[in-house]
Length: 632
Image (cartoon, rainbow, N blue to C red; front, side, top):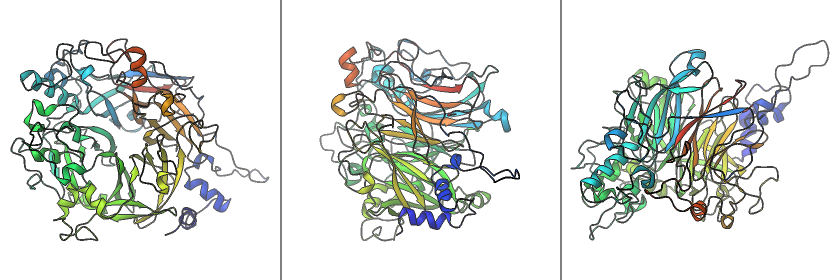
């Protein structure tokens, strides 16, 4: 296998290069087209390039431990669609005491905003003024979702069933129409014909190699699949559909049956009798591992949603595998659809799906490009090369003799298939972003320990994480990789450039049309702000921008106490940046010691963001006061 420099030379040598040869080509590969010279203008003298302005032009904000949002000077951040916002004309208003019912919640914006995408509703410039925002709702917090009378615990009675139903109604996905006003501010359109909630009880379809008649999916309690939960990162397709990723689904399941013993498959995906963080199984047999064993296998998929048709049934695309999906990033290779997805657990894998034919050809014959193709797991070699290992039944270790019955079995047990082919265990592979010009692929390894290999860095443990970059070979079977950025505080870890802003646990990634790499952090609430964890000088979670060519990094945004920042996307004109503030006020060791732990009786001890009362996840619409492009 070739090293990164060799792949660069081979790949870029085939391009028509501007004057400057390989050095300029390397800059292009690294995503630095902003650093490339423009076409020179003949002046009768020597030709000189017209230099472009820096890719990152904003004034950096400092780290913060305040209960507020900060953006650079010259920018403004509006709060949009917080949890509980009415979506329809008949939606009830948000109840500050959390007394909204499950049926109320199903008509309101969901809880804990995460990945999102913007879909224009008009052509051209008007599309940046009117569009659909489609966003995930990952999980719920009982301290905030329930009233003081309801408390935290799920009880095995009608009251417990209502609490489960409310939580399920707060999960899933929201489709909401947004409009930009003449003064630049944004509003959501109440009662838009596009507005929709997709929740933990919405009917679902399965498509691809795994069907609901498979022995590992048949359920007597939910004979037709219902709902999507643990909706974390996301993706979008060029045929204008939204991809939502089911991540930590195992924490919804448990049982009180003393005879229950998890199977190897259940254990590999984290299921255990006492594994439920929610206690849903106390009030709903649907989530009882002993009474409804196969329900667990209904989750862990990428779900495709048509945001323009509120009547369309969401489809779980099983060819993309069953893991704790973190991102479903679409790109194109030789006309074929390519989807990258990480499995967000320490010691799990990075995957890639490639359609069997050009995606336009498949759609022209009525086939989904996400149903027909090959799923691969990544092996990162120590010399900077890498290979994609096909997860195809009958290939290599994935045979009947090794316990894999057919391709459906391989996909239901995707983690175990990747184990069998000896993919590389990674430090929590999460979001993936692809540079629109160079094709370089970036993936966050948020943090981890053990699983020693070069790609996981020489840091063990690795509490701050890093970002890996790779470029694909032309045949999609191999790649070359390097480490793009290390995160951390140089006072606690190396190697961190002295001028790099302190940040840790990179999670969300996005690359805008200009080539800026946007990085959102998700520092664990058990580490946030703690000196003992090396996070004291890092402060609250943040959004940063990086120049892929120069590796310059600047801190763009800091969030409120206890919150994660996530879901970065822009309007087509790049005049508005949308960022989600998830779980403000979540219990944290650092803030609990100062202000007291939150509870249903007092949910706002840690945070009162955004309105001074009960903390509420929300979307930020960030724009420049002068109307310019974000990041400049």
